[in-house]
Image (cartoon, rainbow, N blue to C red):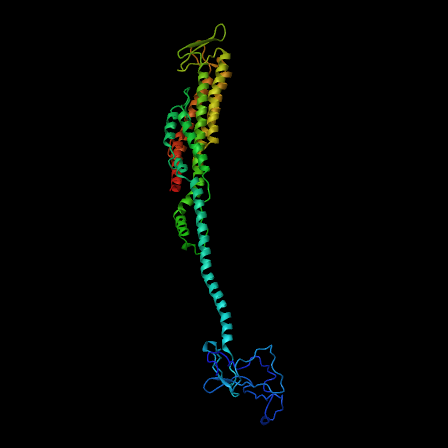
Length: 478
């Protein structure tokens, strides 16, 4: 009996039987000679191979060796059971059986061979999927990366604009603009009013003008001129970024730049807008201070001239022409008269006159030529300069008569007479000429400025230019 639990052929099968000796002894029916192997049938079971029975069992044929075959060596194990007829062998357990692939029917010769699609589809997918991934990545990059770059560029532009604004505000701060926006011209007017009482064209006295307040006010105004010149800074400029409006900081910077455009424009023009007004004020102050200096010098020189008038008002002086003739005259001037009898005293008085009146008129004429405030006032400046140029000539004629005229030129003898009629005539001409020139210059000034004196015209000028400066600075203030 076969071992039903055995997974392979029956133990009766001799595993040690040498294949070349199995089935060598064949009977006469087979037609084979002793020792000849049975013929093998193609496609059938080979001799000695297990055969599957109809009931599913297996049979193995075992043939004992022939008489001529030497016995098996005792060194090899022998079958433990006697050899019998073919013994059915149980098939291997299902878990030990190898699953065979299903057999495919042979392809008909008439049918064309179909291509194998599996590997080709895999190849296509293996190529297409990476290409698609790259294409999608490129599309995403083309859509997303430019937006990110634009946003970064816009943010950088906004940050740069903010830094420019900070620098600009540090220059055009409210502290820097306040002195200009609140420029004080009232103190200038007050100082000018104080000084005008004893200075200006046509004023001849020994009282110096009190120009201290005027000088202080002018110093403040001209100092602001230098301050305004330093207020220069380039206007902040937001760099243009296409599509940058999507960045909040850039959009806000763009809105701020638009809102501050008027301030930036006003600031850019501020230095130029206030330069001309400050220049006019500076030249006006230069004119006034030059005249104040001339007036102060006149006060000193005039006092020295008065000291040479040794004959008091009502006093008399006699000049003996010879033993029988003489001249006597009385001083009628309120300030006194120079001695005509003492020729050295007359020369000293003439020098003092020149120092006072000739030099004063020269200084005044030069002040108008050097410090005329504006082109609009040029005609007035020229008129006042001409007045003082004439005063120089008329004053020189008076001093010449003092020095040179002979006392005996008087027509009368033995009584009151004018000791120097030429000197008296020169003095009268000086006074009359000064009055006429003063009236002419005043008319010219009135037609040009509406003021009757040059001091009044300058006061109006400073107020007007000061307002222009305040307006320009206020336009820049936030």
